[in-house]
Image 1 (cartoon, one colour):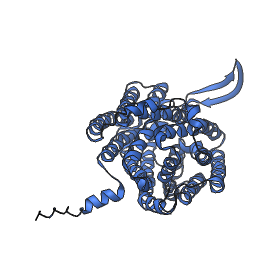
Image 2 (cartoon, one colour; image 1 turned 90 degrees about the horizontal axis):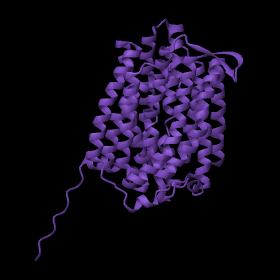
Image 3 (cartoon, helix red, strand yellow; image 1 turned 120 degrees about the horizontal axis):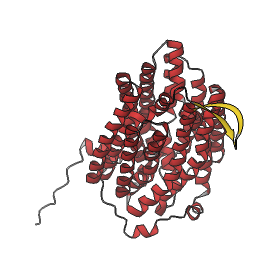
Image 4 (cartoon, helix red, strand yellow; image 1 turned 180 degrees about the horizontal axis):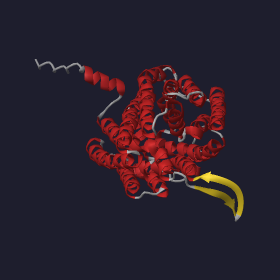
Length: 439
C-alpha cells in the first residue's frame, strides 16, 4: 500500500489576512516603495506653497500684454503657487501616458526605477537653488511621481491580484499610501517648527533623497522581474488610437471625474494659506506654529481616509462600485463649502475630517477604471485616462489662484459648483461593470 500523501498545513492567520488583502511578494515590494518615496515626497511637497510664499515675500509684477499695461498688480508668491498647482496637474497629465507606455514597454519594475531617479534629481534642485523658478523646475521632476508611477503600480496589481479582489488590492495600495501622507506633513511641520520654513524644507528634501534611494533598493529586490518580451511590441504609443478603444462607460466616468477635479483643484494648493492665515488672524499663532498645525490637520485628514479603505473596498467588490464612487464625489463637493466657514482650529478639524472622507471611494474609482479598461491595455489606458483628465483640470489650479486674488470665498464657491455638476453627471450617466463580484 502506498503511503498517504501528507496534507498541507492549514494557512496561518497571517497567510489568511494576506490572501484577504491580496498581498503577494511583488505587492509587498511595491507597497514598501510607496511608503518610502511617499514619505519623502509629503514631508516637503505639501509645504511648497508656503515655501514659495516665503521666497517671494513682497515681490509683485504688473500684468501687461504686448506692452499694454492692464494696471493689475500680481503677487509673485500667489502667481508661483498657482503655477505650481497648474504644473502639478498638467505634468501629471503629460507624464501619465508616457508612464503607462513605459510600463508596458519596459515592465513595471524598470519603469519605477526610472521614475524614482527623476524624483531624486528634482529634490536636489530645490535643495541647492534658492529661487522660485528652481522650485518649479525641481517640482517638474518630482511633484508628479504619483501620476507617472500610477500606471505601473496598477499594472502590478492587475497582474498579481485576482479580478474579484481588485478593489481590495487598490484599496490596500491607497491605504498604505496614506501612511506617508499622514506622517509626512507632520514630520515636515516639525522640521519647519524647529528650523524655520526655508531650512526645514531643505532638510526635508535631503531626507527624501535618502528615502528614495532606500526605496530603489527595496523595489529591485522584492518586485518580480516583469521584462515584457512580446508585450513590448503591443505597447500602444498613439493616444488617439488608444482613445478609440475607451468604452463609453469609461468616458462617462472620465467626464464626471474631470468636473470633480475642478472642485478639488481650484482651491487645493491654497488650502494651506487659508489655514495659516486664519490661525494667525483668529488665534494669534506664529507662521511656523500655524504650519505645524496644518500638518496635524493633514494627519486627521489621512487617518479618516485610512479608516474607510478596507471596509469600503470589501463592500464594493461584493455589491458594486457605483454607489461608493458617487458618495465619494459628494464628499469632494462639500469640502470647499465646509472650509469657507472654518476660521479657527476647532472649526478646521471637522472640515479636514470631511476632506479625508473624499477618499472614501477613491480606490474603488481606480478599480472601476481597471474593470472598464481593455485587459491587454491596463497600464496604457490608465495613462490615457489621466492624460485627458489632468490636461483639462490643470487650468483649474491656475484659475483658482486668480479667483483667490479676487476673493478666496469666490474660489471656494466655484469649486462647490463644479462638485455639484460632477456628482450629478456620475449619478445619471455612470455605469458599473461588476455587480455582486461577477463580471
